[in-house]
Length: 258
Ligand SMILES: [Zn+2]
Image (tube, rainbow, N blue to C red; front, side, top):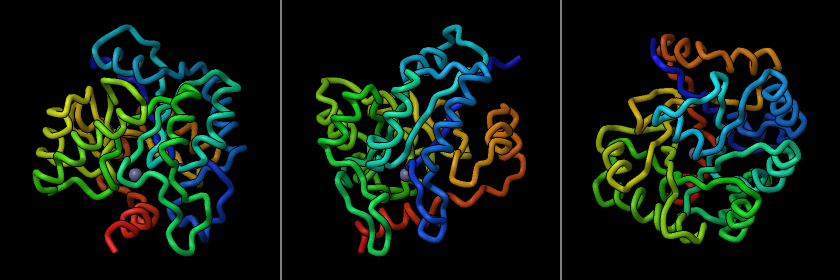
């Protein structure tokens, strides 16, 4: 029987953003997020940190119900809203940032919730005990990306996150913008020395590990369903790759491209 690897949840922002302004359901309300954390603890889930996850990946004994909490994109609300709720419960988390977009304000027409953390805020996040991971350079899809850009998305971005953290090594893990990856992207990430990388729904080995998307539409029932290990498999079996959060990622990406 295949050894069970820890579950990885993927969040984006935390906050009360009206659905009309957040069509991709990126922002989980604070109270919902707090209830989800309590639910995990009540249900006996061990919330592990990045190091614990990597150890489990390498075969270290890990509780069967282990979960890693990840946040993509680096919204300011991770620092301002998620951190206090995590800290109150003593729970670790991991946040993926794109150094080429640090401090980027919301795209026109979007509320302040869509602002991304500055370097200083990322440092505050690290000081608060959240690990930083690399989310490429400026949030373009890495599928089909040329070699020069792949280098910027892995080596340059890695060094930039390292400078934020203020260490001579790390970040240890990578998450693909939009969850998009191909063989060359996976190779570039591996060559840059990352220990593993996360995709969204579609996995491919250690350098494209699938995650479970938790978004604004969750009810306690859907959250429970997503915690069941069958969920990613069921989702993959359905083959209809759910819409990856195009709008906000578009907002981030277009702000750069236009
Ligand atoms: Zn992203």
